[in-house]
Structures are given as structure tokens and as C-alpha cells.
Image: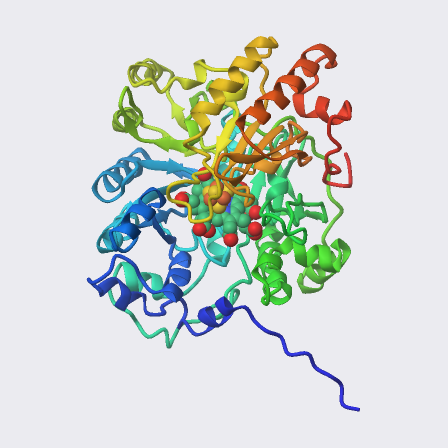
Length: 567
Ligand code: SRM
Ligand code: SF4
């Protein structure tokens, strides 16, 4: 009997990618078509690799449908910014581009970079071309490729931070797409044939799904290293010099509502590599996923599923078999927390760094609050750089002592000193974009945050918990873009006005939260938290964090901690 071979049914996107002539498709023609504000559906998939999503204003959908108008199309443009560092001039360039071509200012993302929303099709080239003219890029900010490589923003250890930032850039450059389509389309304004293109790592079908690297510098897990497809933990010696990196594959948050085959997961440790081996390890980690990731079902295509299906040991051995060196056992490290340290910090280089809290990362002038103008004025006088954090905040970094007063004046003048106000929970709150731009949103997030924070602060005041630094993360759907499964309190949108209330993640990014109330509205959320806050206030142990209390007291039985190897 001949052996039966089961044909593999590739997902439709695999065909679109493979036939795209290295991400060209018919984007050039679509941009030139003046009869619509949109591009074709296959091209919208390819456009993501170029750093842009076609969206439409969901607030206007119904009205435009009634008026028989096409949806109010606009494009979101995301910048690739490994390690999240801008010069003041680059800030001013982005600020100008946002005013000329975007609708809602600059939006700092949970991966240390920017999105600009509402760019019209006819301005997409001006926007992406302008970003490139500023010395930045959008290539691989979205799509089935290696996304923006993030790293710890740790001004206190500025020499190590600078070194790690360099590694983030090096990894990004080592694994990014090589297609000439990006230059052809956005800089030279032509389609190009792609005949001479080659993608030595990604191949012509690119990756099965997105792939995320992030580097943490203990004791601060300010990037949520275990939420990365491939987390890297910088290991420093007693002399504070970099020895190498622990490797932590298999994290990611995304899940689909009602589909138990999809779930958030934290990474586990498989070993340690020295700096000279890092790029080789990263390249082959991507290659393993390229070769073994599921190309038939996009909901099952992240590295976590490849690892869960085949085993962590299998992944280690497969990676090892491709490397020219031995992966060493993981080395000890210790994390203390996974949030930003707000306010002024004295750096080791004699310079000062000011971390500003930016609610939902939105830099926009609104009535009574001129954040965008304020940041523009700061960028005009600032001589250091501006760093973005994975908590959607920003750092005015490398300020000379004599320049602090001028920065302080502007911060106060434009009300950018949110970090001095508000509860501990407010200062540790993240929310994803959600409505009206996100096509996947099931509920509000960024727009709902101010309201729910006020309500939660009333409860915190009632229980004497105003200054308690509770990590609160909200997302408008189960994809978890605010890493909401890692909030000590997580709200995850399920329908308009309805959220899953999740509790019990730890304070250092090593344990996910668990479901407490499913698909509930605001009244039920507040009633539940009133009760749990009350118990926390009266029953907590000394210095016990909210998430740990909830887990210890049995209010919730959250998932096990990661990594499974403990130090
Ligand atoms: Fe995300 C899809 C926004 C970080 C998991 N994410 C989206 C899209 C593009 C919606 C879409 O596919 O149509 C959202 C655009 C909204 C809009 O209108 O702008 C979107 N994600 C964001 C941002 C802007 C949230 C924010 O408020 O800051 C973050 C941009 C990061 C960046 O600069 O690259 C963002 N997304 C994340 C993170 C957090 C992280 O990476 O640390 C996650 C969880 C980690 C992970 O990857 O699982 C995340 N986003 C997702 C998923 C779930 C993926 C999955 O494997 O299940 C989707 C849906 C998808 O890809 O199909 C998604
Ligand atoms: Fe959109 Fe969902 Fe991500 Fe929020 S979590 S930005 S609603 S995909």
C-alpha cells in the first residue's frame, strides 16, 4: 500500500504572500485608484508588512452605510523603532507629519513606538516617505515578520541600557525583511518587479505569523519579557557588565473569544547565550518557527502553539541542531517589577531622566490639555533624546542638571505632570486603542479608561488604597494588546459595555491573571472590585501586592508562574 499523504491546506494569506512578488501585490495600482479611499483586500494584508493597516472610522460606519457612502477609510501607520529612542528632531518631524496627515496626534504603543491614525490613501506616501526622511522606517512594524524589537528603558543603568538598545537595533536589522518593495513603493514611487529580491531568512511566504523579541534588564521587567515570542533576559555580572542573555521562548497574549484552542501564554527558559552568539540564536529561533509554525490556521500560528504542540525540549533541541555553539543552562536573575518608574531619576552618567505618564499613550491637544504642543515645546529645547516605554509612557532622557528647570517649567505649563497626580492604579493603567479605529474591537478601551478610572478611584479611596500601585490593564477584545492578561486587574472587552474581569497576575510579569467574572458590565465590575478591595485592605500581608493577595487568598486560582525553572 502506498503511504497516505494528507494534503496540507495552507491558509489563504499564505498564497497571497507567496504570490506577492515580495510584498508588492497590486499596492501601487491601489494607491493610484482615485475612485475609492481603500485598496483591495489582498493588498491590505500585504500593506501590513509595510507598516500600515487599512481601517475605517467605526463611529461613522452605520451613518455612511445609510447614506450609501463607502466607509470612512483611513490608514493607521506604525513606526518601527527598536528600543524606542527618538532624537528631539525626529520627534518634531513626527509631530509635523501627524498634524499634516493624521487625525489624532501621536499614539505611543505598548511596544515602544508610535502609531498615527486616519491617514488618507492619497497621503499615505507623504506619511511613509516623511517617516523615512526623518531617518525612521515602517517596514515590518506590522505583518508576519519580526516586529519592533523592544528593550528595557532603564535610565539608572544608562551604560547598560545603551548597550542593550544597540542589541535591539542589531537584532532588528539582522532579521528584518530584505525586500526592495518597500523602497520601490514608498521612496522611489514605483511598483518594481521583485525579480532580483531574495529573503534569505523569511522566505517568499514570510513567517506564519508575527514574531516578537524583547530584551529585559533585571531587576526591571518593564517590557514584560515573558509575553514575547522570544524573550531575552540580559544577564549582568557583579561588575554590572553584560555577560549574555537568557533565552525565553513561547510567550504571547492573543486569544479568540470562545475558542479554547487559543490562549495567552508566558514564555519559559531554555538556556543562555553569550553576546557573540546572540544574533545567530535569534536568526535560527525565527527560522525554526518559519519551518514549523502552522501555516494552515492563523489562530494556531504563533510560536507558543508550535512549542506547546511539540514540547519545550523539542524546541531547544531543534534550535540547538542549527547552531554552531552549545546553548548553556539559564543563569540566575531576579525581577522586582514590571512597570515604569515615573518622575525624575538621576542616571549613572551624571544626566537626569524624566519619565512622564501619558494616559493611553495619546499625545494630542484636546480642550484644556495641550499635550502635543507641550511635547513639541520640550523637543525644541531638549538636547538629549526621547524614549518610549512599553507602558505607553515617555522619558525625556539625558538632561543636564542645569537644563532640568526649563524642562520642568514646560512640563507644568502644559500639564504633562500627570505622574504627580492620581492613584497608584491610574499611574499603572494601560489601555489599547480599540474603538473607533481598531477593526477587531468588541468594546471601548482607550475612550473608556478615564471614566472607569474615576469610578475605581472612588473605590480605592473608600478602602484607603489610593496610593497602592496596582497594575490595571484594559483591552477592547481578547487579543490583549495592552497585555491585559498580565494586569493584576485586567478588563478584556467581550461586547459593547461588557468585559471579562480578570485578577491575580503578579507584580513582576511572571504570572498571568485568571478569569474572575465573565462578560459583565460596569456595575458588576465595580461591585466585584469593591468586595475584593475591601478584603485586600483588611487581610493583606505586609507589602503584599494586590495580585499576589488575590492569588494567595483563593479569590482566584490563577495560572502557574513562569518560568517553570525558578531562581
Ligand atoms: Fe495588537 C492586532 C494595536 C500590541 C496582540 N493590535 C492589533 C490591531 C492591528 C488590530 C487589527 O489586527 O486589525 C490593532 C490596531 C488598533 C488601532 O486602531 O490602532 C492593534 N497592538 C496594538 C497596539 C497599538 C496597542 C496599543 O494600544 O498600544 C500595540 C502596537 C504594538 C506595536 O507597536 O507593535 C499592540 N498587540 C500588542 C501586544 C502587546 C505586545 O506586543 O507586547 C499584543 C499581545 C502580545 C501578542 O502578540 O500576543 C498584541 N494585536 C494582538 C493580536 C493577537 C495576536 C495573536 O496571536 O492572537 C492581534 C490580532 C491579530 O494579530 O490577528 C492584534
Ligand atoms: Fe484592537 Fe483588541 Fe488590540 Fe484592543 S486588544 S487594539 S481592541 S485588537
